[in-house]
Image (tube, rainbow, N blue to C red; front, side, top):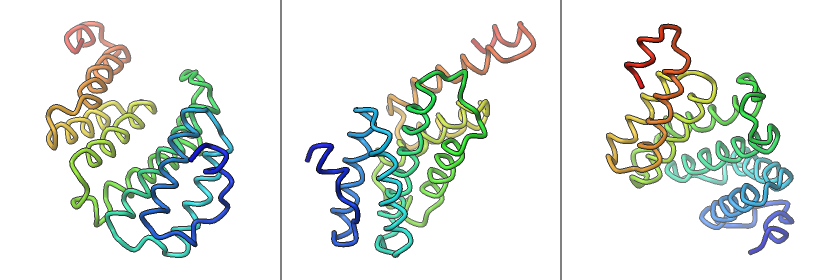
Length: 181
């Protein structure tokens, strides 16, 4: 499906849960790639419809849904602030909702049933969100948890390296910064 088809659907009630999740995942990914704010907003509304109508009953799928919603809020944040990270407010609605939904996915009853890759994605994205708001220690903890699950998960490896660098740059004691770097 192309962007127009995906974004023109105004309800997912008529789809089975797997198809609804596939539709949302595709809409969020394509909207992110094309930097379409409207598509991300539509995906959030459609996600809320699924939650409010209790249409996703499988606990594993519910974790995936919240992971998708967290990604949609992250992409909205990037579009809104145009990748200008210095202007991102750590108290923005987008950041708050991203972290909320990623934490729901992480703490959901179905998290342990997810495949290894999806678990690592959730933990890594949550670590990234913590890093963006200056909570470096928490970010490192999430990335390390992802690496405990899969020690070769490249995104967590790269982000922990960058995160340690960010943390070092913010330390007030130059000697500590150098040691951390």
